[in-house]
Length: 278
Image 1: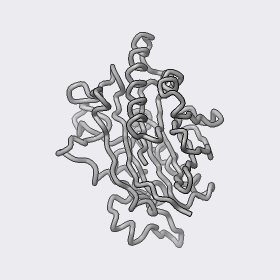
Image 2 (image 1 turned 180 degrees about the vertical axis):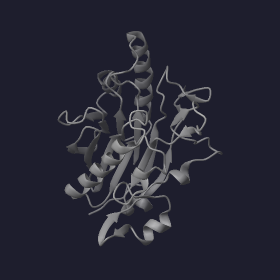
Image 3 (image 1 turned 90 degrees about the horizontal axis):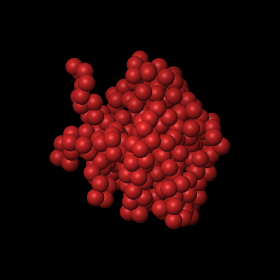
Image 4 (image 1 turned 30 degrees about the vertical axis):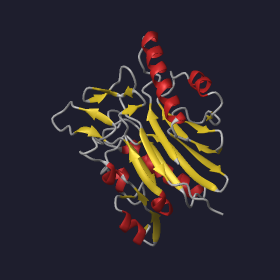
């Protein structure tokens, strides 16, 4: 099972020049079609307002179906290979919840796009979003096989990623396997595995998904795109990646993502073993 999330950088505030949009559309369309042809089964996208999904679906010739729900969330959309059955469970302004299955293989997926740090420097809106998502998981009785992925617009040690009543991330499998809940005042909060520390690597140039050099405190590469996995899926997790190449297309312009041709974000690709249940 391979899932991709990509911020396409073609939102409502994208390039004003139609010619530029057309060029980016063609490049992104080619890349997304390529990854579906090469094994991606689920694609979740944000900042897609000016992206031509009709062109993409024509190129894929019926292999993929788009699930857009009931217009409750205009920031997230999901594409799935036709062998997967998808139900849109809930939509909010910044996230969508899906149940997907193929035979006895089942997952719950939440795709999200949190507030940019430039618009929410203190993180108040991102923390509220985290609380809303965790509350939704409880209200919708999603107890297992949950994958939360997207553009968190958070650094991996930000409060919303770590606090027990928010995403409650744990970076180490042994800890979450020994205790998948954190107890606070007789209330149990589920922990989620964040594989980012295991994934980032100097050796493979897996530095992050977004590059920023401005500011005296910049660390240059940031892992804004992240994935959180429920404890029962830990042993099925295989890998995550921020690919710099798709087919023959380099997504990079020298040291950073090529915003002019593709996006200012690299995609996130997550791989899990498919395990049948029931």
